Picture 1 (cartoon, rainbow, N blue to C red):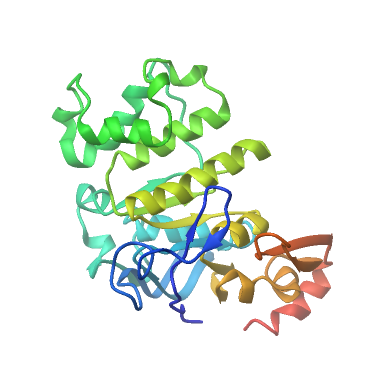
Picture 2: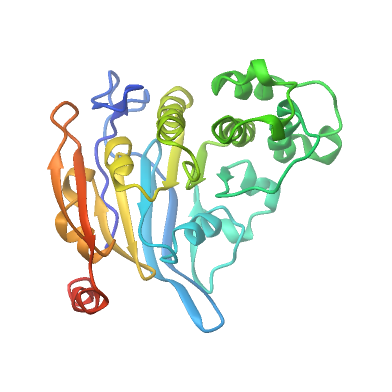
Length: 306
């Protein structure tokens, strides 16, 4: 299913959606946003396993898009392909009109910052030193040896509220604190597009909300385009403008949360029987999963998708 463009909204720090006070919330003229990421017939696989199958998807400037689906459906793979870290087996991803797979690594990093699902341990690095790693695309390897922070690094530290921790060891931080530092490192790339691969993994509920609200705020302040992989459909429905659901490497649903989040989506994409209501205060969909569906029921549901 092709992506649909929609009016861009902004969110307050409480996560509520509301119309922006400029024509499209970012100071741009009213109307459909420019496409900054476009997947065309995108396919990718490993020997004996196809991960993505002919994906067509367009993401407009300033959108906040949530990718959802079961493990192995291709969400993280899509982000890596769109960031130029993997080469498609067929099709392509365009970043501002250029083939992501053909861009030099540093050139791609100046357009897209990818916060990976997990990161290797960083013993002996301070917060400041880790965040500076995000400046590699701009400053190069020699620039990374400088001791001084540039303006972008300083802003990244401040934007996620970690300036006060700048000289603390990263491995002394809690999981939530460390995730904020990793977000600062991604911001230090100073790229207009931000990809987040499961940014709330391993975090407790308080820190999940803290990270997501920070992303929403930074998206508005920095005029970013954000695509994030989420497992929690309720978080996706609350914070995203648009939800793209993947099932077995294909797009099963694409649109605003109010249209996409349904009992049928729960069953056919996520494999659970459940109910969907509406948040009385914010107006976004709220899911109440009841129980997993058995494999035979899931097989019957496939006929409704393909």
